[in-house]
Amino acid sequence: MDEIELGVGSVPVAVAARVYGKDASWVRAGIIAGWLPIGKATRNGELITSIEQMNSRYGRINFYISPKRLYEETGYVWKGEKR
Image (cartoon, rainbow, N blue to C red):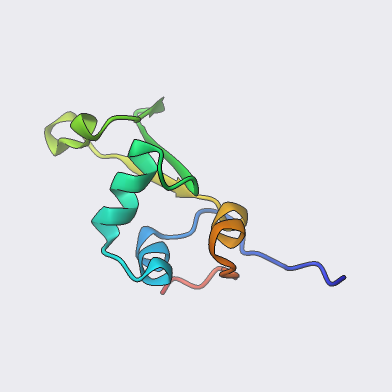
């Protein structure tokens, strides 16, 4: 069986949103709430797990979307392209 080569680093939220056919805010909310198991959300190194924590006055949230998890959930092979 051929091994699939995935991109290195995080998949951009915009790319994941395009794969799911949804808005980027849907992807962000799904990752934070835990019903979209493709990545993690952090702020200042602390895991964000509640929609209430999405308020921008608390600071920027960083999203990591795993190329492997996105592939396992959708079959989409991300090779490092931006969009």
